[in-house]
Length: 61
Image (cartoon, rainbow, N blue to C red):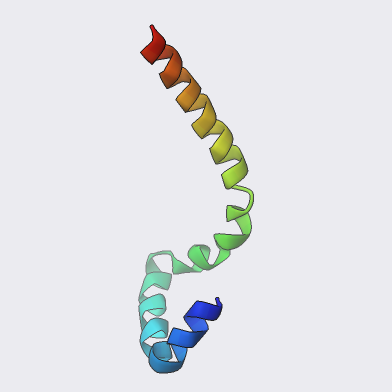
């Protein structure tokens, strides 16, 4: 967020306008993503590893 803050000083209004437009599309959940995201990588990583393992098995065959 620090990076956004630095840029926000110059174009904070522009960023807010973009975010407001995205809020209608789904920027509100996006703002919440970082919190569940910390949980997502765990199950996603497991699914990814399982997928890779299956692919490797298929490749071996």
